[in-house]
Amino acid sequence: MGQGSEKPVGFEELEHTADVALRVYGRDLQEIFVRAAEGMFHLIGDCGRDGPPHFENDFRLEAPDRESLLIDWLNELLYLSEIQDVCYYVFDIHNLASTALEARVSGNSLTLHKRAIKAATFHELRIEEMPNGLEVTIVFDV
Image (cartoon, rainbow, N blue to C red; front, side):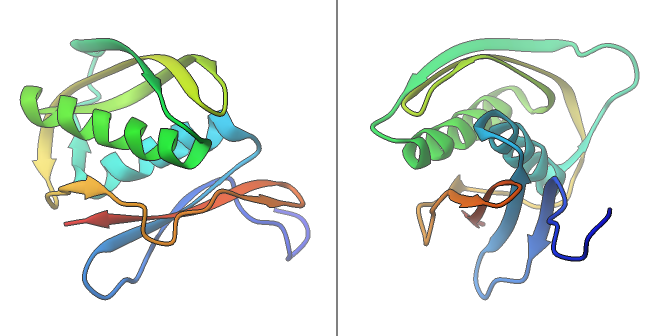
């Protein structure tokens, strides 16, 4: 990993009093969005990754700022996951700006439920610029 001050790229689960939280790291905004989605589905359960994905969804989102867009992205994924009982693990973001995104997500049936997540929240949400990329802490209502 190199220097001790470098943050890993990806996500880590954080202890939180009533909810569950993730700290997400990425080199750029797109990586933050992908890693946040990966982390959220890691918290929810295991994806059936045997073979190619069986479910696919395309969508477009708009929001007033990048923090709102991140929350809308995660909550849209939660909604799609719940109505189809799907665990998404392929996140192909075609276009991403600070206020809009277009994406295709793919996944398979959820094979193991770890916990139910009701929503991604705005609690203390702020995407921060760091020396080696971006960092954000996301709190989920469980």
